[in-house]
Picture 1 (tube, rainbow, N blue to C red):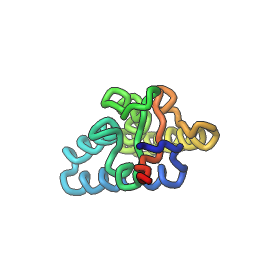
Picture 2 (picture 1 turned 120 degrees about the horizontal axis):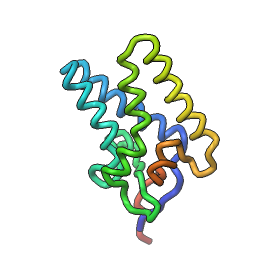
Picture 3 (picture 1 turned 180 degrees about the vertical axis):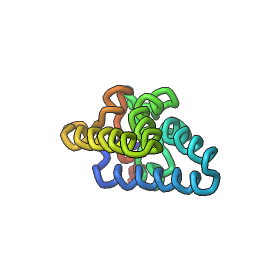
Picture 4 (picture 1 turned 60 degrees about the vertical axis):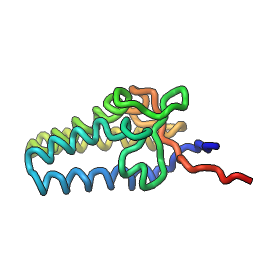
Amino acid sequence: MRVANQAGLLSRVVAKSIDVIIILAATEILPKAGFLAGVGYILIGDGIAGGGSIGKRLLRLSVLDEEGEACRVRESILRNLTLGTGIVLWRVPLIGWLLAAAIFTLEFIVLLGSREGKRIGDEIAKTRVVESRLKEAV
């Protein structure tokens, strides 16, 4: 039986940090192709393999839709479009950095202020991030 508690802020930040490290590694190995693959990964990562990117899976988090089903690719793209835009803007010196920082800051502030633990992307895609631990059978 699945237990679905709202994911904590720290675990979400660590999971996203792991995903960003993956992007940075890909960009270092193959600069142009790695960057494009990394942006693609950010966009669709939560919609593949049961509703969680590599970072979320490592921290036992899942992204669910309104019905409690695992996030699909469409919802993943919608929920991560703001972050993907920020990552693309980061490649543009100065003005891109400022715009990217503004996007990331706004997403974080909305997440902090949300009782449901939702950021802008979650509101757009109608998703939520939960702990995905299996309850022990008694």
